Structure formats: C-alpha cells, structure tokens
Length: 60
Picture 1 (cartoon, one colour):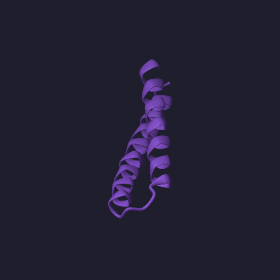
Picture 2 (cartoon, rainbow, N blue to C red):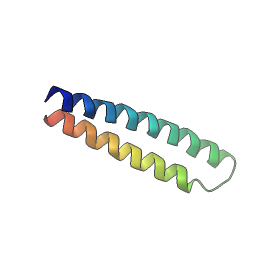
Picture 3 (spheres, rainbow, N blue to C red):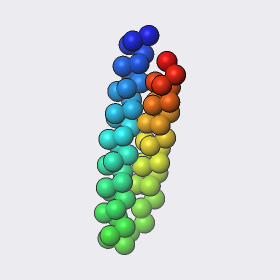
Picture 4 (cartoon, one colour):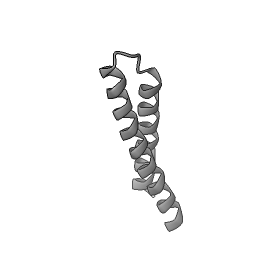
C-alpha cells in the first residue's frame, strides 16, 4: 500500500511539473502571437493527471 502511495505521489509531482512547463510554453506562444493549441492541451492533460493522482492518494 505504501508503494502505491509513493507511485501516486511521483505521478502527481511529474504532472505538476508538466503542467508548469505547459503553462510557461502557453504564455510564450501567446506572447509571440502563435496559436497555443499543443501547449494548452499539455497543460490541461497534465493538470488533470496530477489532480487525479492527488485525489487517489488522498483516499488510499
């Protein structure tokens, strides 16, 4: 059980870092007046993964 929680914590940290990188790239693309479609998708998907991992970790 402890190993499962540690794996979820690692997924959460990786998801948060990916969301942060996605937000930075989204900002850079918006400042360059380019469509931020891929950056927005990366940010939303990694944020969702991090949130799911956090919720699962809270209930285990």
